[in-house]
Length: 143
Image (tube, rainbow, N blue to C red; front, side):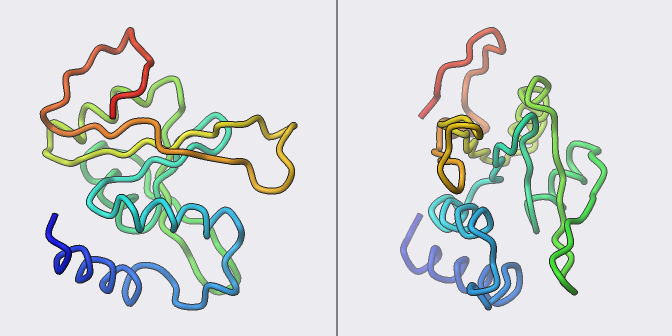
């Protein structure tokens, strides 16, 4: 993606989708934002325990394309759009998004919450595109 388009998308996200006041963001929201900044052309699924969660515009797209309930998480007076899918059922939702020509980025917890010191570490493990081959019996990363 050309740099000027990435810059325009990032500016849009910063001014319309994500809150400007980063000091008030939780550590997990900051972590989410770092991944979203890097993979802004993807629908980001962020592992939170037994679920993958998507936020903001990604949540609205997931709700519309996959028929998911659009919920919200509140932080003070701010309501954050949220859509989540169970970890064990996620591949079916990823497939629906790819069939609708969306790229999907899967951010996984890479350490257990019990052993984590502070915020659980996460990393990008899969990028799925509309052209990705899918085999639901395999769990390996597709990068």
